[in-house]
Length: 276
Image 1 (cartoon, rainbow, N blue to C red):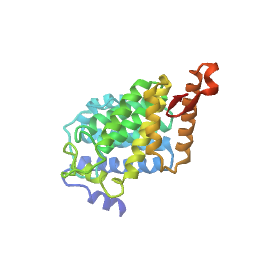
Image 2 (cartoon, rainbow, N blue to C red; image 1 turned 90 degrees about the vertical axis):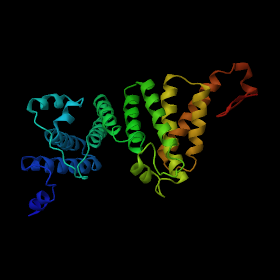
Image 3 (cartoon, one colour; image 1 turned 30 degrees about the vertical axis):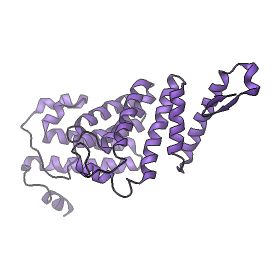
Image 4 (cartoon, one colour; image 1 turned 120 degrees about the vertical axis):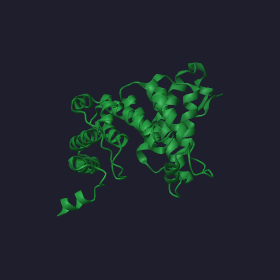
């Protein structure tokens, strides 16, 4: 009975031969998200890959634009695309983002980066700068950081920070570059609060400090750390606060090492710099 209800809910625009693929795509995507929340990452990856394969059956054009190895195998069974207009259908960007998160959790950051970048390509077809894109940029940068590609991580985190800054102040149109629905969601009373905005930007700044300090300590990085501390001053996350204090200690230690030994007794070292 439940399966009959599921099938009857599908849009009639999908031909009968694709009804089961549409049902498989939706159910596998929902199951993948559930498994991801349960931290069953291997199971989540399997479900999301099943959803992606079902998506390719419904629309082979999606497969041809994918970086996945499985996409090339799916091209051998091409047929005219059968698109569904149901809003409940997951987009390719959503599925690839889920796969990116899953692979990152499994410590396969090379594959995670490929999934995140593919997700970005799909997401940017419908919006230019949205919080969904900022989130994907952030996670892609994090995987690059774990791969020790600090320059690329810095580039993506800076792009993420640029997008977040556009959501600080509501506009008359409630939209950003035409992305009205995303802006309205982003500017809800909860998300548009100063505390929430500061927290998001503070975390990104802190990540920039981590990447930049991995390359070298300088005044710009020290300034970013101070800005991050200011934005996260009301943060209650003990883990983030502990890392912030650790980074501050690293900067102070580096600053102290630059002071000649004979001057250390009369030198005052603080996060703001070195003074006599």
